[in-house]
Image 1 (cartoon, rainbow, N blue to C red):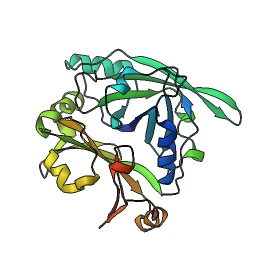
Image 2 (image 1 turned 120 degrees about the vertical axis):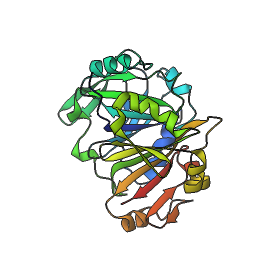
Image 3 (image 1 turned 45 degrees about the vertical axis):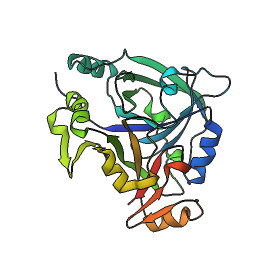
Length: 277
């Protein structure tokens, strides 16, 4: 069976019952967020939509169900989601590779448009989060992409255009990379300066040692919260770094490094946000 193609679909920041606060936080970072969505699974979200991928703030409201797979991880960047043309094929490929894949799940959320309300529909297949230390790794088949990627939601005051990188801190990058080799094949992984790199469409996933993460981000990185493996930083590509810096000049704690801006995880729901051109 042919290997899957690694193309990033979106990343998920789990915010639990603090969805209102998370919305205000990321709006203060000058992301345009979609109106609140309510999944048939019980969760609620806001999205920052880019050209081919997006950032999801995922939580639950007082009148919704509490999804167990969200609660098992601390607040922060915990979801790494790849595109799937067919969720069933992904499930079969992962199962054939001996990976801990869960059954395909179907759900939807209503989207209010000027022309009326329609249901955005999704089918996902997830690796068992109880057996994947870094967080929730899964694949999403968009059955109604036109209800998700809409021009009116893709322009951001901070100039964000795409997810450029997801940095995963792990004690053993080579060992952690075995999961992605099983999914995507040997050719999907390269080694660079001690990091295992998975090209994923317009961005990449980097598996780095905790020491390497500490050297690059210092106190700005996400807190491990007792974990040996976790998603430590999120890269966002912008059109003009000087314009982004001007836009974010009032953000407390913003770190201005050569060729990048770093929003510490301590002020962004345990997610270090790194802006680069």
